[in-house]
Image (tube, rainbow over all chains, first blue to last red):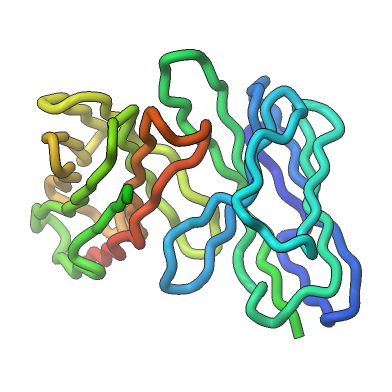
Length: 115
Length: 112
C-alpha cells in the first residue's frame, strides 16, 4: 500500500446508526487531517492531529468524533448523523516543519450518505 | 477574512486549445498557495506549491504562476486526460497548520 488509504469508500447509514471511517497513511508524515467536501462548497477542515495530538477542532458537531491511535492511523467515528452530513470525507496527511508550508496528500475519500 | 475565489466555475476546451484558470486570494500573510487536481469520486492530487510573487512552476502541460493577489494555472495544448476539477488553496502564517482555505474549483472539460 502506498500513499493515503481510506475505508470504506462508500457508506450508507441511518440517522441512528454508529459507524466509523478509517484512514491509514504510508508516507511517514507527522500530521493527519479530516476534511469534508460537500457539493458546491469548498473543502472544509474538520480536525487536525499532529504527532497523535489533536491540535484543531474546527467547530465540528460532537456527532463526529475523531481518534488517532498513532501517527499512521486516523478514525472518524460517526453517530446520530443528520442527512445534511452526507458528503465526501477526505483524509489527508502532511509533513509539517517549522517555517514551511506542508503540502497535503489526500486519500480517495469515503462517500457518506445519511438516510 | 481569508478568501479564495476561482474562475471560471467551468471551462470547456477543444483538445490543443490553450487557456488559463484564475485563483484570486486575500490572505493576511501568505505561507503558501497550492494547486490540486481532483478527478470525479477521488481525492485531490497535489500539483504545485508557490511561495512568493513571481514564482513559477511547471509540470507537463501545466504551468502555475503567482502574483501578490492571484495565481494562474496555464494549460498548454490540453488533452482529454487533463479533464478534471482544479482546486486552489492558500495557507496563511496566522492560521493553524494544515488549515488550507480552498476555492470551489474550476471544472475543466477537454473535448477531442
